[in-house]
Image (tube, rainbow, N blue to C red; front, side, top):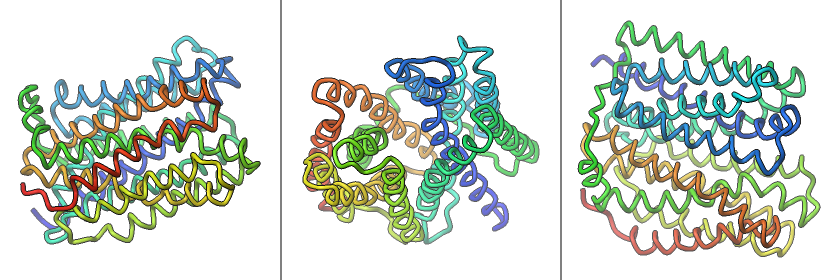
Amino acid sequence: MSEKARVSRFIFPLSQTFVLRLMSVVTQSVLPVYLVNFLGYTVKNVGIPITLIWIGNAVGAFLAFYVIRRGRLNGVIGFVLIAASYFGLAEGKAFAGLVPLFVFLGGAGSGSVQPLLAPTVHLFSPNGRKYMGIGSYSVALSIGLVVGPFVASFAVNQAGYALLFESLGLLSFAYLAISIIFVRSKQLEVNSISGETVSYYRKLFLQSGFTREFILNFLYSLTLPVILSYATVTGEAEYGIGASSMLRLMTVMFVVSLAIRAAISTSKSTRFDQSMILPGVVLPFSLAAMAFHTSALVFSLGLIGFGIPHALIYPWALYNSLQSVDSGAAPAVSYLFSISSGAAETASPPLASYVVGIFGGSSAFFAALPFGVIAALWVVAKYHHKVET
């Protein structure tokens, strides 16, 4: 394979990663307000459409691996569904009853594309710098996470919700067109995805090198939605930190994460074992700083400190997982690994809501803290030596 072909196979999935994360962040931050203010949803009922995003993700990933099964077509079908979702949301007032369907379609479109991006960039990483694929992938995710809220805020303030959704729909069409061109020219052909049996996935899961990463990422992913959903509310209610100041603190946390990811993106490491102890141990301390109401300063430092596990746990665990198998199994491992994030991020919000309903909004971090503690104990027990693969 020529160097030009290798670069094209590497860069295009990274741009897809950035765009998909930007879209998901915009949707998750804007959709709740849009549903309440413009479609008359109650705050209690907003959680139902949001949950449909994650359900759609799972369905989209299943379709990619068991129905479509041709990697080159997933981009086309995925962005068709995403475009349909955004154009439907733009006309939400006229089709209010179909809004849950539009949300589901967007999740399914993203779910059909996303699981293939990580193994693609991993497989086409430069020789001698194997982590560059996942490292660059995680940087693209972080850039989308930082840029997304600014795009949403600017677009809503300047043009309103409908134009924002229409713009994202047009962006989806642009990537649809690019995907069709690449499919036609076969420049970015990905190997066929075999619809593996349950026993095959069970065998992959039970490999010690994979099981360790799956469990750690699951525990970490149980804490992330709590940070995203309750940090601003808690900072404002408990310490009088204004909403705009809290959003700036959240941005600082994500920028810290982005800086760390960028700094290590060219690492020559073939695995991350003992080094995982650092983010694993920082995780419960950052949660504890936010859970125990000491002071606004301690709370803020805890939030910013969360940028360390946010920067390292997911990409390192994903990289270790991909390194634990041969290249032919990389798509299946990526699909299986994505279940750890998806299941946790689906289960965490209802659990936090239940705790908050009993003890109040500031108790959300106490709901997340046990998972952070278990994650720390897990890395201390399992990451003190290198796993043989």
